[in-house]
Length: 423
Image (cartoon, rainbow, N blue to C red; front, side, top):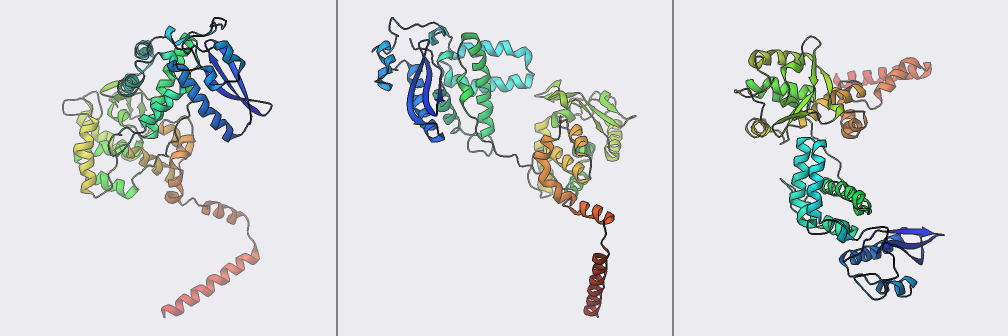
């Protein structure tokens, strides 16, 4: 039987000490090490070893703290506490179920609160990553050291598509799911969630590749006629793939020239939008209005705006592989996912000088934070808002006669020189 453990490195009067629980007893072992980042790192490594030994039942107090008074209390038994040590306050891991048992109960209890797409993602993560690694461990015995070892193993696994290994974003998502499950287990069985103390990996900034206005015109003029209205709406509304594929005619308001985003299609099923903020009204530009008028003559008798010949929503894989990528190859454009049409629309709106708050609402963002984080580097190049607008404003309000005369004189000299050269 292995004891319950939780641990931390703390400081008192500038010196560091270990703080952990062993068999329901809170143990503090003080050092003379100064509270510095380097010393904390050293002690944390030692604490991880302690926690690992406790979790596996191989911890011997005197091995780590030979001069401690507590070493005598715990005696030489590596698997059970001495008779005079209280075990109240926290259950031992044998009082907690195995991870694979608990995780299935947690999954079933959480299902009503999840969207179908999210539950499918959780199910896949459990089957591929979490259960194979932690399945036979008691949920209360999972330590920070075990989670770090799991993270290191994840970092070596092969990723999808062109990724050699799993991305930091994917690893962090797996750890987040693990942390949520262990937090619930901790509440039920009275232990501290060890995943809370595992730092997430630093994620690379997402690099987007929107199409230029000229490239957008190429795409629209070259794509198959039956997909032209669809592509115009994608490029000029910023709708997500699931939103445009799930768009129904009842949500197209020609009178007010608005597209009402109320549903989305994920994995072939109609669901609520990604977030509450995604519920929005998108203003139709003239090209979008005309494209929908044309599309109405084709599919107006059905439920979905853009659909197959049988009236079912467009399949994303089918469109991507049979229409989209061949179109890019034909135009000799860089291969990009169809989702880049959303980024394209955002950059075009900003390039046109639209209010960023309005653009954020059109995209379904709750504020402009994501907008500026994602698209800020494109704005100066597209709009040339590099200080020239401010210069024009203040120049029209503030004028220095002497400076103005000098400017005219220079212009006159320059014009004369140019004329003489041309002659």
